[in-house]
Image (cartoon, rainbow over all chains, first blue to last red; front, side, top):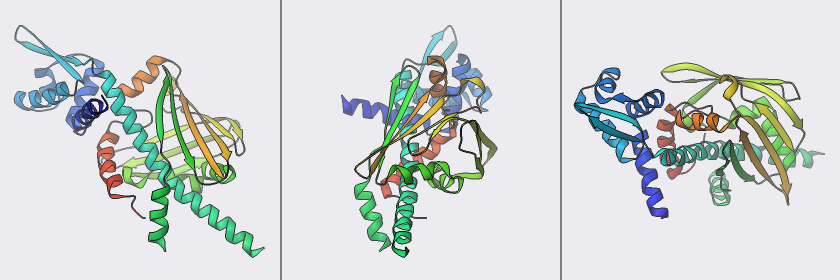
Length: 119
Length: 174
């Protein structure tokens, strides 16, 4: 179960590691769009955009549906995975922040100690 | 000497946890090896605060940091990131209790930003810090998550990837 969640997380991170794919997610967050729309918006070939959408689909972040000749993309049911990935990203941010804070605290502690000694 | 203290620190590193505690609440917790008085000082003096709030590994540059930590006082931080417009983060302090609690608003996003409460609880020389973001609604938090925001735009993910690598290699010494 944990392994599964981790695999999904990895897929989400891989999907989110690309600026175009993040842009696509943002775009789909505003409105559903066809692959053609997305390719145009991001100045890409259809094939290139299909690849990106494929990656997002694998991570469960996007679903697509073909109606007639148009394939429509929308944000996927993998919102939960996205949330997990986002929360992990958020945790990493705070963790990095707090590692720096550790250094500041150590410094203040030793400063206090040496000030104390001087008295 | 430095190398030794660095590895000791890494060995003693306290874990950071993040939970979505409710539909509109995010909670970050972390213990620090120091008294609340020192931790509080590092949160309330601009010259100390700016040394840790923006981890170097994120690739952001802090252009300015002004904070007037008292009830009704304001803060404003401006960051720049290569290739994009400077971003300003600002708000107001709603509550300030020395060594124990700071509450502030996050106003850069208009009305949808969270109210952040940081509490400092000292126990046996260690201080447990709990940072709680309460959003005005479930929709506001969902929106923050789906847009990748919460004070950080989606570009941050890219740097987080780099950060994961950096963390794997151990914390870089400045």
